[in-house]
Image (cartoon, rainbow, N blue to C red):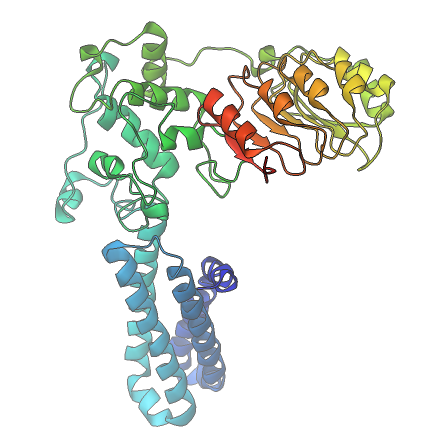
Length: 456
């Protein structure tokens, strides 16, 4: 299926609300029109049924295109599709009878309307299963109701972190809350199901996603630790990511060998990790520390000077002193005075965009000390291997964009091998070769290198 059709299919989640609203409105008008005082309402029923039928037809067509994207499996997916098609067919019949066979509509319209209300409810229920998981509605239901749908008893609340099961009490609820919407029994993006430990171990379309004892080599861990603007970051599509503490817990669990059906007390858990586990379980208060303390505060006068000189400055959040800095006007060249302000605020700059600003090695030397910088964009400038050697001093760097710097070669790339946090490098339009990329990847395991390498 072409990308354009898949693009159209994504609009199913928007269109589906229209036939639901239309059939509810039409049902109300239908029942009101049965009263002699409201007989005139019967005249608008053909129009209402026509709108309901057409919106249902469009929604089903978009749904089938969305289904073709893959990743929808299990009984809920099939039931949602079949009930949706049945609902659309029923609305076409209701419209046809209201227009071409009034007597039949008067005899059967009420029953048909009731059947369509049932059909749209059931269709919505199975659609909700695809979005939230098949147990979403009854997750917190009394056990008598859980028994009716074949669900096991809820695990008793843990009051002592040492007695918690690492998988069932800590990691599994964490994954379900952040990843379960797209990786469950009915919807398996990338053919990955995270609903059970066995399903997690089975992996997805690219193979295993967790390697017991090796978090750094596990694809699941790699994806949740990428920069959030990376195309492979998970969870995708703007969904709420795991917190830094949750990422640390997941890394610990993988490195510990994926322990399950045991207790935390049976494992050798460091005090720091034990504290994270207790906080995640709600058995210990989170430490009271201001996010702002992570970065040095910048005075209002310095911020004003930065803005006045041509920088666009934003805070990471209202609680943080961390700064995101970029040029105010695209293509504006930077000056030494402008860079001097950056040097003064270097203890707070987390993201810095210097794309197309005329940066060269000499100018880069003015900001060589950036202790908390995580994301740096140097694309479309005149940086050479000598300048790239200065970047090796940015110890916290995670993402580096070198696009459009033709003087950068393998020699400069080799100077980055000491940046242990570096997760992604963009190299289009440089003189780096395949051998240079391979060398960097061997030095920094798991790094994502993007860009066309030149043949040697």
